[in-house]
Amino acid sequence: MRVAALYDVHGNLPALEAVLEDVARAHADRVVVGGDVVPGPMPRETLRRLLDLGLPTHFIYGNGELSILAQVAGARTGSVTYWGTTSGVRPPESIVEIYRWTAAQLQPEFDLVLARWPKTLQLEIDGLGQVLFCHSTPRSETEVFTRLTPEDRLLPLFEPLQVSMLVCGHTHMQFDRMIGRTRVVNAGSVGVPFGEPGGSAPDGVELRVVMLSMEDPGPN
Image: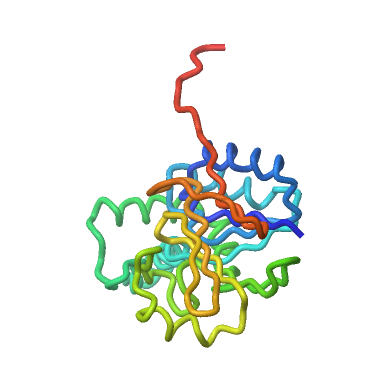
């Protein structure tokens, strides 16, 4: 089974389309969408595209989805209780306005879709064993760690996991590292990638990069 892990699309439909072409070339059998499909500039179109892939597709939520759902709930109750930040502090008003706009774009059809997504997903993958997918870490969708985070800080979190691999995102930076006995792979970001491109390993894990042309093709 060949699985494409798509993380942090952030409503970037042109980038998603380019990545989906690469998914087809790679002959993926199924797709895991690892959260933060939204917010972003084309939320409805991006979500609809992912819901209609024609492949078995699994979704988990990220802090982006929780932020949008909190805006929907806050519009009814008059109080927003979740902001999607590591500190829990309300972000700048420009970011809040993006959340509000995205929430308005997704209602009334898609907010119910987001509300059904789970926090984590575990799959048995040929050659890799039990693989756990989460947005950032199994305990938090906003926790930040990178390939440079000291292992001793992360061991208490990853050592108890009964899986051979964990796939995450959130930081938008690809990496592939060992934390104790657990292999941890950050899939990067479809829509807003940071850092250097990844690479491939001989055991079947590929950190793929798709280049997207931003040139205006002009009138047809």
